[in-house]
Image (cartoon, rainbow, N blue to C red; front, top):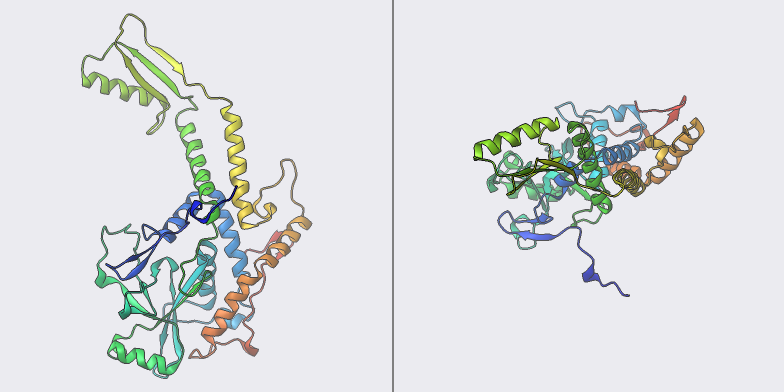
Length: 376
């Protein structure tokens, strides 16, 4: 059997949004916001994404003076900037930073810019070509609508002094110039990236729902799903409402739906409470819970011992954990190299000078010492 391309569902639907002059980041233009929300709702995905970003960040830049160097007037240092890049890359496979310039066309300030706040211009938007649209609430979580005037269009990174000068003139002078945005996507210069979690989004949602199911089970007193068959009709809607209220309170849960009420015409029998049978629910739950978590962990390629996902009855030894740290350091080496190259590219002409001694922009790997992972 042949599988054709048309049979494979696209993970991101790209569509021009002519109202804002951007390319929507999926059908609702909220893909990155949705990814972050789904990760945070899943304990397993949160742990995996956090571990991934922690290994990308490592122990920070090797040169401590560079590590602690201030990059703006708000107290942001290079280590904080690196951490923001690592978190965004681990969640979305992209990151961004806003850059201010001085009168000598040298980088003079970096600002943390959440990747989810950035959108690309569409092809018909000639006015904003090679710019990034920045807005803090594309998902409309705080406001129901987006005021186009609140969208900041900022030039993409280009350190060429002649280009910067041209951008300043086009903006109408320094007082109107917004600086530049360095925007990186692992899928290409003009492509929205797929998140690392994308291949297992359904599993991540399942993991979150399992957590909710467990909580509902506790709140309902571990009641099985039941049918309460009321023989005869209630005399009034008020009586029916009071009975439903009492039934919910009996279940011991907020918004519980473990018992379903059914009314029948016959009133010559006493009410019945019948269980809704399910085949091996405990076994199904255990299997789903385990396979879901395994799928998420395997997607990130993290040795289970680093997530405390050990074989039952077996503790991870110091040697096993140390070997796992070495393995995952090697697996995430390309990401750290990307961060080092970005720091070199952006910081080598920064004024005042913050470049590390000898031009060493390397990041120290995440370490394991004294029988525990070093999370300092």
